[in-house]
Structure formats: C-alpha cells, structure tokens
Length: 189
Image 1 (spheres, helix red, strand yellow):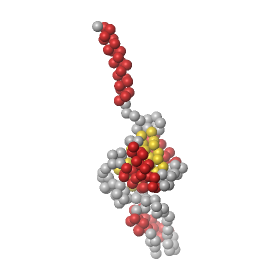
Image 2 (tube, rainbow, N blue to C red):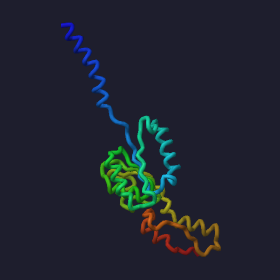
Image 3 (cartoon, rainbow, N blue to C red):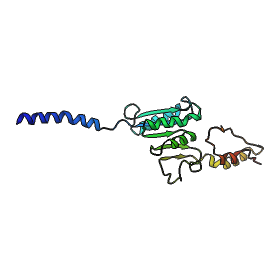
Image 4 (cartoon, rainbow, N blue to C red):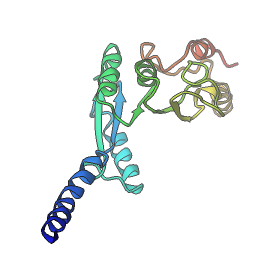
C-alpha cells in the first residue's frame, strides 16, 4: 500500500507542474501597424517600447511586438492588418489614420488603439468621443479642429500676409474632406 501511495504522490508531483505550465498564457503580442517606413517610425517605436517598459513590459521578456510597415504604400495596409489579425495579436496600435481605418476593417474583436489629429467620429472610427463603442479607442489631438484659430493667430503675427499655405499629402487619407474644404485656399485678409 505504501508503494502505491508513493508512486501516486511522485506522479502527481511530476505531472502537476507540466499541466500548470501547459495552462500558462503565452506572451502577449502587441501589433503595430504603420503606413510609414521603419526609419520614419523609429522614434515612435522607441517611445512605445519605453512606455511598455514603464508599465513593466519588456520586449522579448514578457511582451512581443509585431511591427508591420506599409513602406509608404497605403494599398498594403489592409493585407498587413489582416496579417496581424491572423497572428492573433492581443492589441493593434495604429500609426496614422489610414492604418487605423485598415485595422478597423480587418477586425471587430481585437482592441485597436490610435492617436490621431483628425476627428475619429467624423471619419467613422468610433461612434462618439466619450463612448467610442466597439473595439477601437485612442487619443484625438484635435489639431485640425483648431485650424481656423491657427490661421487667425498667423494673421495676427504676420498681418501683411495675403495668403497662408500648408503642405499635406492628399493621398494619405489623414486629412478628411471637411478639413480639405475648410483649409483649401482660404484667404486671410
């Protein structure tokens, strides 16, 4: 009888840690989706890594980062977003509006986090700012929402300026149609 108890105790001592190890969660994976080049995103990625580190997550130790770059070819974003979804990342961090839109089109279950200068309600990413709903949330800097005020301040600084212009990539998708109309060839005088 003692022999059976000993074998039973020994087998449970060996099997239990193996079973517990099999039940442990794998390392969380943060997917990053960007329309830009990896060189252009170097500072953002360093900031992301530092923010994760400040929260106790160190890449390679207790979190993995899957970075996907469209290398300035916006038509690649949907496939890259689908790739992150197929890899079952835990969250998708998007850089710029086109990446956020591609991620939203690719999944409605994986959390998506954005930081935008355009109104996410206006472009259809979220239903409202105070209750975004769905799986998409983030930070809206309202940079474009204050364009009129910026023009007024520029006019005060340089009253002799007949026209003030800014450069934007019309193919980027980060400047919504309403802002294009608001900013396009607006004269200050």
